[in-house]
Image (tube, rainbow, N blue to C red):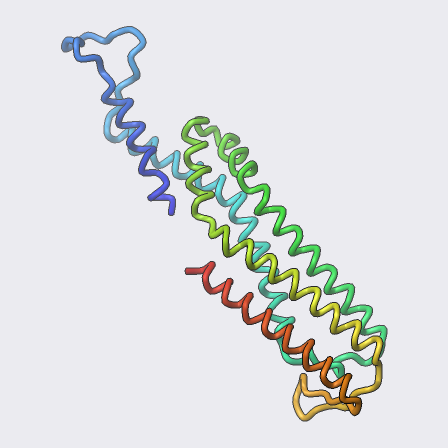
Length: 224
């Protein structure tokens, strides 16, 4: 990605290096003309610029990627069949504990959304802090932002909010109907004697599973 982003940077440096007035005679140096650099000096400048861009990107994009990885790990845990099994909970207190954990997950997701929302400003600041020329910093920032799959990010965020809300509904269902189920032969296959409760339980599970599948699809698109 950085090789593509820096195509314009070498061009800028080379253009500056070649910007000598046509009327200039050998041995003369017009006042105010840009300095001439050797090929070695130019390559060194490009290398340093790449390093600075890398550091700026790591500070912002690296942080986003770290948060994404943490959220996906928690999401993977939520996808386990045992999380959809009321027999996982030994008491109503366990439901409260899990609800707190779900709220923490929601807060992490909200924090990730903010990182994406602030990415333009944060990248601009990080590039300037690396002492990169403002004009080049603006171009690099814009190119980096173009590399973000914004449509996928927005869709995944909305789905994740739905997924968290659906899990909250399931916890409320467990709490309201505590002890009215029987263990199933496998995790997530509890049964209810009351037909309406059984239908509600199945509906909640199906919604959670379907939303989870959609989120997985968005993750697959993001890594392409």
